[in-house]
Length: 384
Image 1 (cartoon, rainbow, N blue to C red):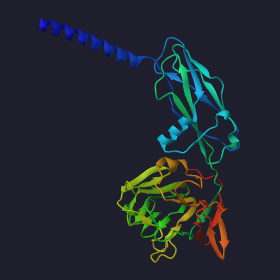
Image 2 (spheres, rainbow, N blue to C red; image 1 turned 180 degrees about the horizontal axis):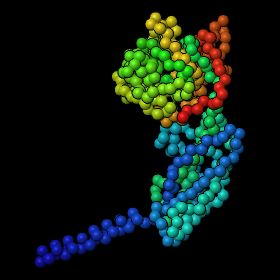
Image 3 (cartoon, helix red, strand yellow; image 1 turned 180 degrees about the vertical axis):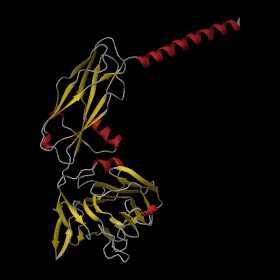
């Protein structure tokens, strides 16, 4: 009798299990609504005040009947969540400057995509150059289930910075007046460079013998004078070759808590290392901290030959997203920004017969310079 009951139980359990698997498979195959892309980047051309973009949901598998979809402009809470997730600080694009040609759309039976809705963005001339904004649009409702996590599309809207003037370096320098004894546990170096000629040890910025970012150390494998390197107490390099006549954004970060040291080229990680250094006194290099060349260095001043702008030093390790987002410009009031030389021809001044470059961060770190001059560029600085 017990064997018979057990046999019946196992038979029933198998039927239930088979039925559950079929239900689960059917649920996976059930048509659902979602956005095929979750992010679009829009650059606003200079002088343009209005732009149109398409908005279009789709179904995961074809459905025989018509599917109704409704959209809405999402609230600022989604902007905050996006920034937190991606390490960005985009502002919310103003909802009163957004218009949908229709708040609803239809996916015809047997079709994969909804009819396009036109999204009109206005007031673009009032956007601040160099700032980025985010506009989240959500699937408000649909006549089929919506796939969770794919119901929002983010439009990243930015107005590019037009840099039309830069500092020309050949045998020029800026000496940054870092306070002796002040230790920076974490830090970031970054700037835009355009190389005219490659030599040996082309100084970008830093303290010789301490922590310096440069291109062209002949001691590198193969004698590469076109690789970027961080050198001093610690050193490592990337193996990506630089070329003349092209703009690059270069950065170095050191995050003391994790020990991670990273070199970035054009906002992308190019090389990394792990260090155990507690911090750096940036005044302690040979003669101090320099941009462009190491003035008076006994083994050669190692000048950079080319153009440079947007030179910055931070007292924090900037994230990859933060670096990529702000290559051409940054808010001078940004947290952690220690020194900021725009090098756009507006920040050179004379005091007591000595020339200086103004520190745009407001921290009074004006840098002494020699005969540094500026050139008008034929085209705006662009990172490609």
